[in-house]
Length: 205
Ligand SMILES: [Zn+2]
Ligand SMILES: [Zn+2]
Image (cartoon, rainbow, N blue to C red):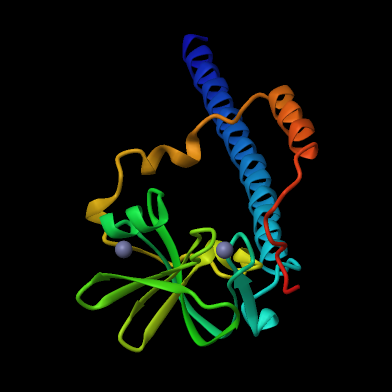
């Protein structure tokens, strides 16, 4: 009798362990199915993003742009690699933490002309003489356009950081900064709607 009871307890113990193992397997299977669904959704999102109607560089050639006041306008036959430069000269020239620039080829100045500052032995900085908008970074046979001056800045995406050792301390935290509360943004939008802009539109006129 005692032997039977011990064997019986072992038998139930084995069944319990088996049940627990099956439960773990089921849970794992459920989780992995959920993960796969989630990942495929993410993947689909990624595909949708890459197939979105965002204009590409090629769709927009010749790309156009200009300064804030419209005194200087340009067309670009082809855009190359885009970057952000952290060097101290770019910080000064743009009045910002870094300079977003894209290589530009076959540039035609369609209205006005940029003014250039010989910022070093071999480099020039182009800007609008009337409104001060930074427009170019140039050296012998090479010209880069300030990305923010393109009529459609999203047609290029920065691919590399240049001179990272001059990066400002706050750079890493910028994208994590809190946004103004929604009601304050609504108030800002309402106020902005009352202001008459003197900025040139994002197309040739
Ligand atoms: Zn201007
Ligand atoms: Zn620079």
